[in-house]
Image 1 (cartoon, one colour):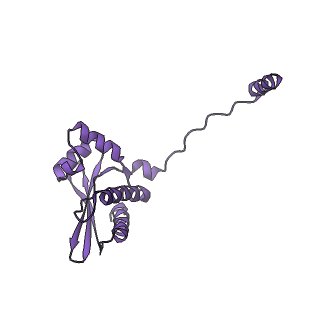
Image 2 (cartoon, one colour):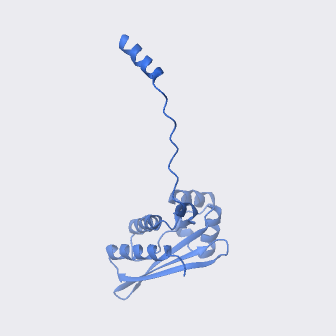
Image 3 (tube, one colour):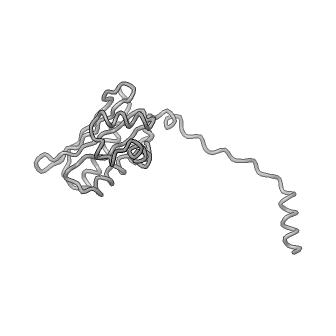
Length: 165
């Protein structure tokens, strides 16, 4: 009992530490556009592989510091609110642009993986929601293994984040 009283007394006499403010994000990140990344479209991949590629692409874009990314859960919530069953129901540009606006995103990213013979071509187009027009695009060619496709996505993320000349 005496021990608890001593602890309480120490707590009262110790100076209170000022509250620490959360760190301020770098200016580049604050000004980075908010992007809704839609599911990678790829008939050559299984559903789980497509979901993984989409998640990887979102992380790679964020890592560049050139973009902030709308969480996939927010996109799914908005799809549900809009009574669309899945990303698959919103694959055309018009639907994605409208959904991006509803999410308060500034841009949407549409990515496709297309088989061309033995190789795959990965294309990503970034659409500006204010102008409703394409803003940037990147294209990478690779073999069709998931490891090579992931490397293509990494190069695409870096290319999309490069400042315009």
